[in-house]
Every structure is written in structure tokens, then in C-alpha cells.
Length: 243
Image (cartoon, rainbow, N blue to C red; front, side, top):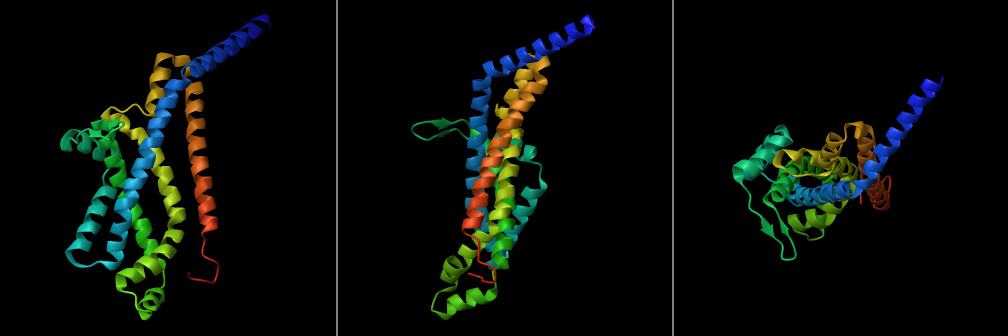
């Protein structure tokens, strides 16, 4: 019995020491978390800026432009994100970007472009579906009051489509957040990579490091999802109405 108690005591001390190790390196993981957040936000914004017009072109465009957008989207969605990142960094060789108050390394720029363009390919389908879901009568109603086709789409269709796209956009945000872990392939030490560095240094702390990292991911995902849930409820179309 005494021997069993001794092993239990040693295990407890070991676990406590591992948690102390994680606590001492919380700032190291925090820097990785900030990089993860920055990559996620920048990539989502780039995905929206590129993806929304691409979705609109697939719904309202025609000819070569529509075929080109559709083809590029299929290629991006069908290519593994790690391949896109490697091509951006090692093949395209994007330069460092100076923002005045700070500069972004070429690896960060490649990460944002890779994640952002991949997200744009998926966001385009979210927005394509939401734009197509708005009844054609809405567009005709806008034209009937003297709006051009472009203005009718802009002022009548788009506001409704954006509201309907929130659930899909919510899922895409979560996917991009998780995909940031792939940027280790181009040398960026985001949250998960820094966690790997830590439990490689102290192999007994693998569980503690993973739990700490998981908690950070959970907080980021939960907070974002609740915020988007609020927006979805706040701007939801009333039932039985189309505008």
C-alpha cells in the first residue's frame, strides 16, 4: 500500500510540475495564439473581398469571366492547403510587406494569401448559394422602380444574401482558424507549432500542453461563433418575408 501511495504521489508531483512548465511558457504560446488570430482574421477578410465578387460573378456573370472564376475556384478547392502555401512561399516567392508601423515577413504574407485565396474559393460558394436563394422577383421589383440591374443587385439582393450567408460564413471561419496550423510548412510558428516545440522539450507535459492549446482554440472558436450567432439572430429575415 505504501508503495502504491508513493507512485501516486510521484505522479501527482510530476503532473503539477508539468502544469508549472506550461504556465511558465504561457507567453510563448500566447505569441503563437496572436499569430493564429492575425492569420485567421486577415485570411477571412481577404477571402471575403475576393470570394463575394466571385460568387456574384458565378450567379450574374457569363462568358469567359464566369468560366474563369468557376475554374479557378474548382482548382483552389481541390488543392490541399499545404500545397497552396508551399507554392505561394517557395514558388511564387511573395515579398515582405512594409505597413509603415510594422512589416509582414514573406512567410506571413504567403500564409495570408494561401489561406485567404483558399477561403475565397469556399466563400464564393457560400455567397453564390445565398445570392441565388433570393427570389428573382426581388430583382425584378428593384428594376421596376427604376434601379439599374447592378443597383438592384447591390441594394435589394445583396443585403438579403449577406444575412442568409452568416451560417455558412460561421463554418468557414472555424475551418480557416484550424487551417492556420498548416503554416508550419512555410516556417511560421503559430499556436500548434509552438505547442509541439514545448512538448518536444518536455515529453512528460504532452497532455498538459495539448489541453492548454485546446482551451485556447475553444475560446477563440466559441467567442467567434457566439458573435456570429448574435449577428445571425439580429439580422435574420423575418419568417414569411423575403426582405
